[in-house]
Length: 155
Image (cartoon, rainbow, N blue to C red):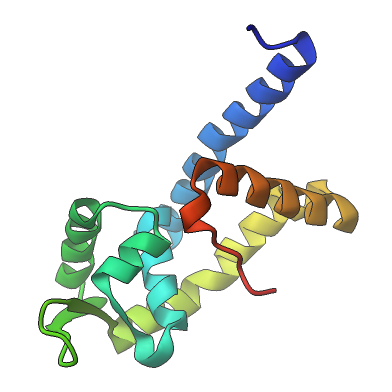
């Protein structure tokens, strides 16, 4: 059954957003700190984790990434001295990703510009009510895609 014209218009808008937003975020982060949005997300997740440490398998889940993609990105970040890996002392089957002081400093220096771009691209175009609705709708769609992997950020 084909999409109705109104559904097709909504889908076209959403698909365009899904394509353009990552490019805009990547461009700003590449310019400001030499990272992709994916790499920045990894560093940010580590920066906000207890002791700035996560199992790589957990980090891959947060990033909706395969371990292979995560490992390649982690290698690039290691070369820059932003992260390091260690065997998990509690369970040697796991590898920990640890954010270095240099990684923390980079995240902290990149956050203001990143937040400013997100504010300009998303929140400046929406009312507070619309922003809350967007968050709720996005969460419902994400849950439909993968009900086992529901993620809700803390406000």
